[in-house]
Length: 110
Image (cartoon, rainbow, N blue to C red; front, top):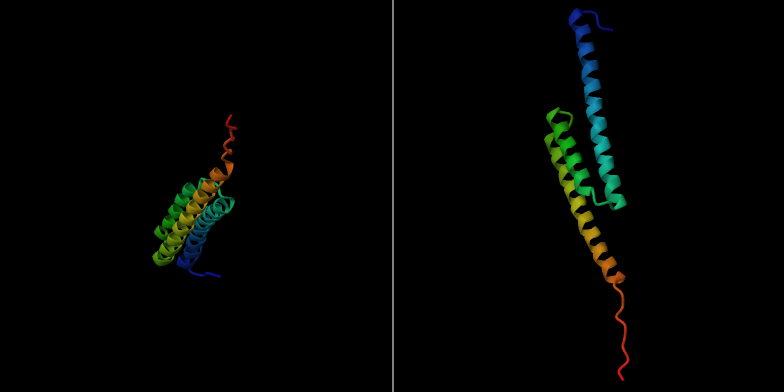
């Protein structure tokens, strides 16, 4: 239990900082989970989710919640996953297009 006036003030300050940090961490984890769900479902909005997640990571570094090296590592991983997802969806679209082509009708010569 704090006794001095400055110690009491420090407790209040720490509580406010903890609320602020938790809010930032929550929005970061939501953005990362949204990105993962988007990639897993194969939606086309992967790029938007990636941008949002990378933005939240940048904010976490700016607010000193994460170190810059951890943020860089996570952003790099997001970019790799997004690129792989884009290549996979592009390949799937090409396969679907080839399979969906109608066959040419054969004409009988007279």
